[in-house]
Length: 103
Image (cartoon, rainbow, N blue to C red; front, side):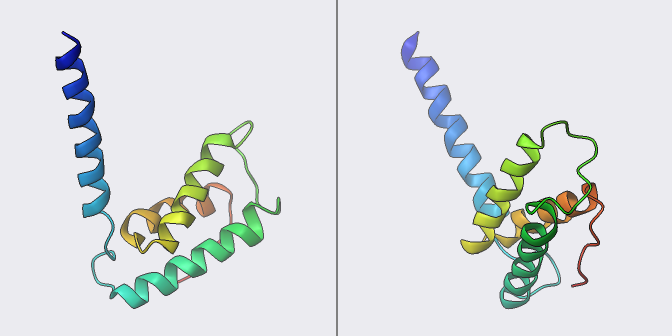
């Protein structure tokens, strides 16, 4: 029975990796360069206004999950996985009532 459980874990890991890879490219309608520049702009805004404590972090008592998600998205920007990162950073900026920069 342990082999079946182990196999399931490997399958889950492979599926997770596959999902990450498909979401890694630029969002529809953007070139890779445009997406990278926009991702950098969003990362800067998050760091400047949210991580520095200037945003309104209503809705999450300790901001732990949101902060981890945003930091992961920033790392994804640096790795070129802009399709996955951009929506997360936009969501975190909106959640903290920070204007989302235009594309």
